[in-house]
Image 1 (cartoon, rainbow, N blue to C red):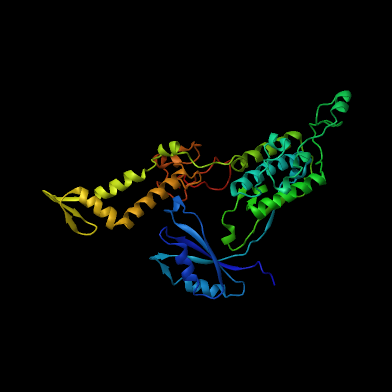
Image 2: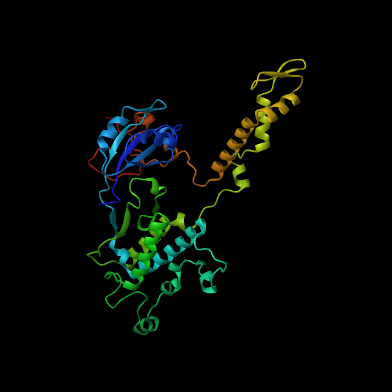
Length: 390
């Protein structure tokens, strides 16, 4: 029996006000419920979210899905459909990733990423910071996976022989312009594979897809997709192609190589950081109403007082839960503001560079057309481009 296989339902629409507890309470009525997962709010979908509900494999998932179609949460239609199984768990990337030059560069990147993520989550901490060799390369870590990793980061070359034969570094006797076959080194590949599996299992990072799968423990398929090296290319590969691949790949992995910390208080203040004391004062002022001379009202309780100071004292003492709620809102907003990965509004299409291939509203295009093409410039094609006059 495949213990990892599950049945699941995809919820297309979850209003921002619906909590995960409400989704789980609704789904626990059905036998075989395991877990639920909710994605981040989508700014382009009015902050609506998507959700996945996981059940045991043997349940009648279509019957459960049919019953969920008749349930509304907070007057919101969930739009449930049956979630299909993964078609391919292992997906391949370009075969030139097997070249020893690429593999050595990938080991360097993977070691840096492991060091960063281990430090972020407090893994493999020790009193010793590491030896000098490790510190020089920026890889101070007690992770046994990175032990002696510097042995595989140092390149070797027959520099003297090439100098005597009058060849440049990396050229062979046939010339580098014509390309060369991929040069594999099994020892390097073995080291890299352990690091890739560690990143995928421990940190949910798919190395060759340069992406992270957050909260996948709550998803229907835990550790579902993994990208791996493909078969060797049939044609020869030039040095420039390898260098271009390594440069592009390193740029895509930039978010893991340099960990972005929270914004400082000074930086966040430029975006409207709130002060807890000021917000409490605003709350008190908003709930202090003057009815007449020496007559003030607290709308929270309906009681009257002789002065605003008495109203403030009353609110602080008798409505402390309301004041605490204001403080929590301030704390929540400030944490959101300092988060470098906070949801942000997408760039307006008119601010992007226009290619001149798509007609805008002022050029005869349909304003607000959801099918209007707004992606990168397209090459000449027989297929229609949305947004043109029809």
